[in-house]
Image 1 (cartoon, rainbow, N blue to C red):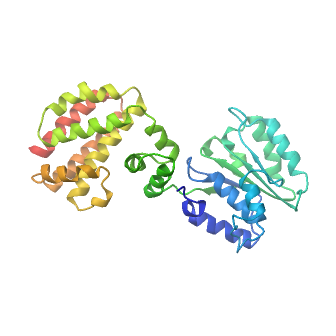
Image 2: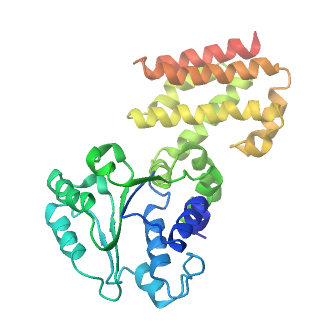
Image 3: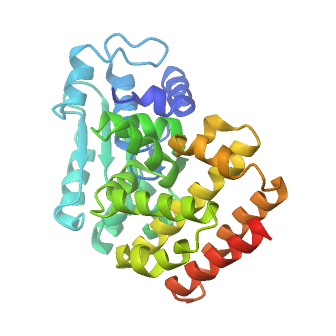
Length: 330
């Protein structure tokens, strides 16, 4: 089941309920955060709190006719603008400004929501500035963005900035399960990605399951002191890598795989990502000292840094394999 906005953003919903209750909302907010953190849900939740017929201390009931109309995007005093194609055009902001100048249809309150605000054209952004500089009427505007650095500084300076809290790995896992991704993959993806969008993109990679299986096989061979692990770099793993994103995915899977050995050694089994490997890790790392396991993880993390300096992926992974052999078994 998909998490509610009060579960995803408990602090912010409590904060805005207090502002609604005390009638202290400012005229413009910039809600920034990664995709999937609930920006549009929070903006709508606040709008519901403003218009709700049965609001309790600023918290909307989510059941009355006003809440339902806002949820279904058909409340006359809650207007949402989103990109028309690749950008938000000046004509859309002009329409919004014309709505600014009208009194509320059913009350004196109006709420405006601009999704993907970073996609405003220069003309649209400049057109919006006048309202932000000289707000009039009982209006609250919400600008939503995942890339605040792309907004004009003059727009940012005229909004109160609100940073959405990142989903915890547990919350992200539950979101992915609610999106229809298997529990096993959701658990892995929640440790690889920072947002629902990023996780779904990884999951859609046609080689994702093969990368997981091949890296697991590579590391199992390495822990058995099998030098075929070195051969696998060229014969298996490199074949899955087509671009920088694939390189990063392979390295992140390797980091999680090697990290699991350290977590197991120190009894942190709840944090292990690939739980099916626990018995194998116990059996094949018993003779490896704690310090060597930790040093092995440091080698992997350092290899991730080296990749940024244009070392070839194959060269880096082959060197890493040999270094792990030396670290664990010499």
